[in-house]
Length: 124
Image (cartoon, rainbow, N blue to C red; front, side, top):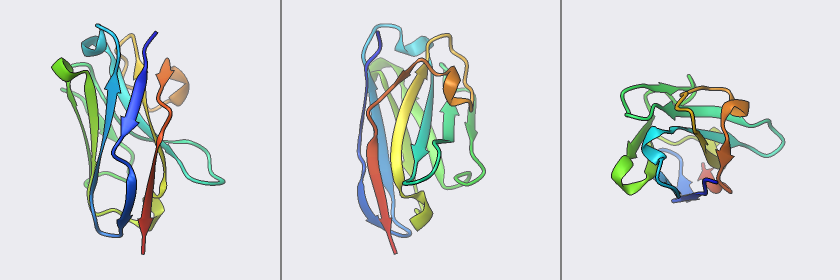
């Protein structure tokens, strides 16, 4: 069982920045691929970013490319999402997820464990 706990959400003005963190339990974190997803009110959950177990592969949704950066610190069992130049349309609950076989994927159903989410609200 893997537990994921997100933090770092909040209210920020458009153009501002936030850094989300996701702390994972367990001894095998360094072998997991990790992903960030988000869900806005009334919308389906959507992929944001993913990172391989080593950090050597990273992939982003077009909507966040160039503004968001996913990274990880394996000794700390933590994955991050640095969000810059935030837009009102980035407002959503952000979730981190783990793929325990190490597959960095954009498909939510391929992730095994999910956090509870953290709210990000961007005001105009």
